[in-house]
Image 1 (cartoon, rainbow, N blue to C red):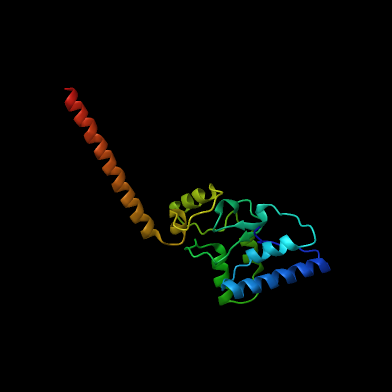
Image 2 (cartoon, rainbow, N blue to C red):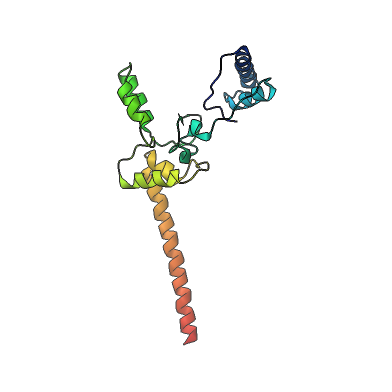
Length: 187
């Protein structure tokens, strides 16, 4: 289970669960040196003496990992433990803005929440990249062109496209040569 959003009723059982989760997390951190909370969460759930309800995926729309979930997302889940380059989002801009001018900025937060998707789109290729990303509900590989393009790594993408185009043209030329040889043999 992924714990992007957890709602608790505030009972003693819930408090015990959160305490157990924290203890499992600390033990795992000491043992492995890793700060990941999901294994500890799943262990705490497996040993819990109460029931829980799974929330639909839209309550944990993993924007960078599964961009297709962002369109229906109620809670956009941004995390930075991913070691890949991540596309810039309006959340990044808002965080930068809040660092510059601390304090409440309700209007900007409302604007962010009213968006269909969180990515910054300023030109047609970026629109195409977003459209391509959100059509895929699976995990988005860190080196996919869409992710690279939206993170500003456009030279890498263009270089790939040039090499792919070159390889495509070579295959076409090779195929054309075969057709010409066959026609010459026929004549």
